[in-house]
Image 1 (cartoon, rainbow, N blue to C red):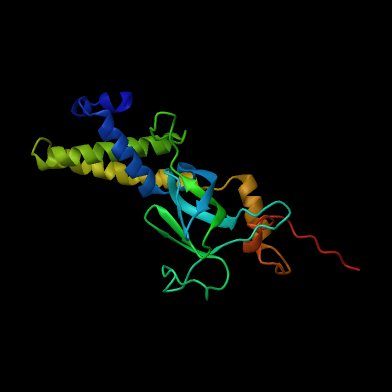
Image 2 (cartoon, rainbow, N blue to C red):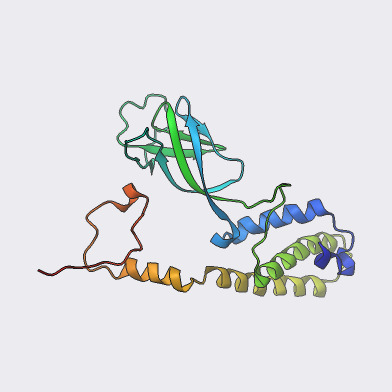
Amino acid sequence: MDRLTRHPLLSDIQLETVVDYAVDFIRIVGTPPSFIEKTEPIEIKDYRGYLPCDFYQVIQVRTLPKAGNKFEYFRHSTDSFHMSPKKELHRGLTYKLQGNCIITSIRNGMIEIAYMALPVDEDGYPLIPDNSMYTRALELYIKLQFFTVLFDEGRISHVVYENTKSQYAWAVGQAQTDLIRPTIDQMEAISNMWNKFLPDATNDHQHGYLNEGSKEHIIIH
């Protein structure tokens, strides 16, 4: 807010307006560092459970079995009649998302979802990644949205408006590129996935991709 209100044309912008634009920007850019990874148990009643209030995108879904039993992993349903209450013919564990609910192929039970969440503080305000390129792009997005209203009202010139659009286009591209650049450790995992001599005999999806990025060791007898 301090950095935005330094601009004379933004001196009277309201906090609620900034928060609305900030949340929109986080979702529009959509890079993984903009969100946090979380897990959450969900109770399923009559095939339906409620998603967490900070839910943005699902990563994977699995059952929460009783002690001694194995986890079982869901896949996204391709069934045209998944929403039908008659699910006795369904094969395997499946789910679909609808509104703020997850609809599964099991009638009752406990599941766990891994998901991307919108990061917020204890007061419910969105948290911003500590990245100078990201914050600059966010500031320009808010500035552009606010200037659009001023331009429509004839309070700023076409030159000022177009200059802001150009600055934002460059800044958001730089921010996205910087945030998706993998670290050395991430590159090691990617390299291990791409350089496996033998395909994994197991279904990694059924193990939550636990060992997907591990190095392959071949023993020759």
